[in-house]
Length: 403
Ligand code: GLC
Image 1 (cartoon, helix red, strand yellow):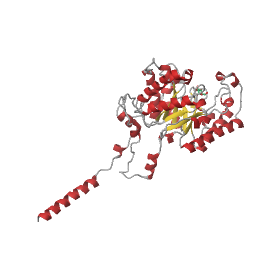
Image 2 (tube, protein in one colour):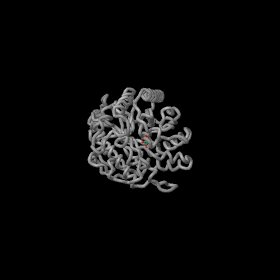
Image 3 (tube, helix red, strand yellow):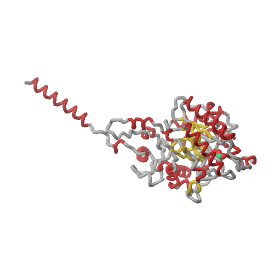
Image 4 (spheres, helix red, strand yellow):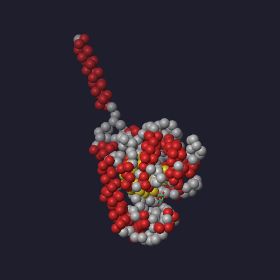
């Protein structure tokens, strides 16, 4: 009898256990899914936003700037979106293995306002409408040139003015809220660095440490680009030293954020293999500029040299040069497995014929499309721009040819 009772008890207990396992609820979609907005509000330590805030309604610090150490950003941005109760479908597997850098295909430079020495809040760059329009016409990312160097205090801390950083936050938030990736580009300070490399490199590091701390809780769609157009007298060795040390410092708080490195000679193609990359760091891309040929793309840009005063046409010399450079970028990608991103290309519209501009844009963007190379057009609404602020419309002779 005793034996029978024991057996019955064991049987009961096992059934209860199996029932628990079977009844264990599948993750509901609201528990497991995350939109970027709620991820960042959940994780930020100094956020100006509330949980679940509607990201479409505000550009006010939705992503939450940060001051403390928080390494959860990249983990959170990879939160499982599985809504099928534990079963992973092939489509979901694909989604998980997609890297954020795969999202960078067709971008636009929002140059101007944040390179200026003035703090003005009435600029177009803080207006969410423009970002919505960029998405409508198929852009997936922006490059945001920012000159932090205009707003720094004295050594040894080189504090960046908070009011300026708030402006930078606003522009970044506008873009992220619209669903665009953002590459934050430290622009316009290369000359200062070049004038006294050893004297100014510490300031450069301190600037990046502050930027790195401020945006550590931002989603992975925000990326950093260390320096714009390094060139002579900065040597390859100095540039490698500078970028390797800066990456090391950024990695303390942003272990997996995508960082774009520059090549020397103004982001020159031929320096791709001379550019040092931290071993094993999968989240580095290389930023390349192409303005072939300068006599075509910079015709009328007399502020860079009187030799650019004459009208020229898009010709075979330019076509061949562009093709040669893009093929080399592809070769680099294939050999290294590392993404190359053409972060600037475009033509100054001062005296160029519209037909030539269209031909150029058509040719260049088609090559990028064929080779599957990501690009970011220079620029939105100034002298090389795709958009006319006065009429509030995109320029057909550029946009209709941008593939
Ligand atoms: C570089 C310069 C920028 C210029 C552009 C096209 O990025 O920094 O000021 O407008 O090239 O020449």
